[in-house]
Image 1 (tube, rainbow, N blue to C red):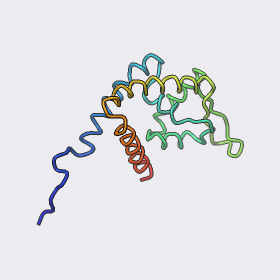
Image 2: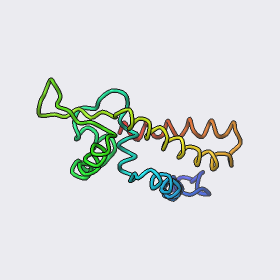
Image 3: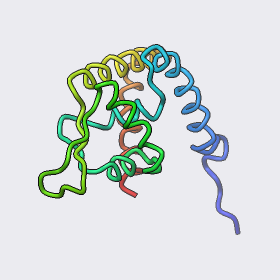
Image 4: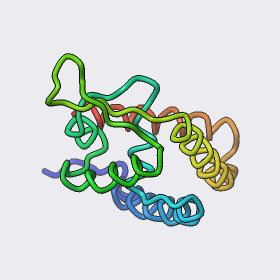
Length: 147
């Protein structure tokens, strides 16, 4: 006996989220282009916070990128004065990755512009629903990162 499918009238989550994600990334592209950033470069800048991150491998894992793929991105960001890579005093084989003040400023500027664009989309949802949507999305994101 087959169980009833109470949610059969809605599309699967991936069927809704993947096209939305693609549309959001496409909406980010003009902002990134205006600041000379690729999606991977923005992912790197977004992930590096105020505390240095130990190793390029740790960064690659955190942003779900192949570690060899981000080397050119890191080289570019470093040559532009947006991040530094320095030897870890506790393990000279490892590199500590840090944003420079210019890197933080660029990250914050780009993130603000990206989120302004997102706000135009979020305004389509009533304010109370928007807050619940964002809380729920953050919860699902956290769960997906823990797996």
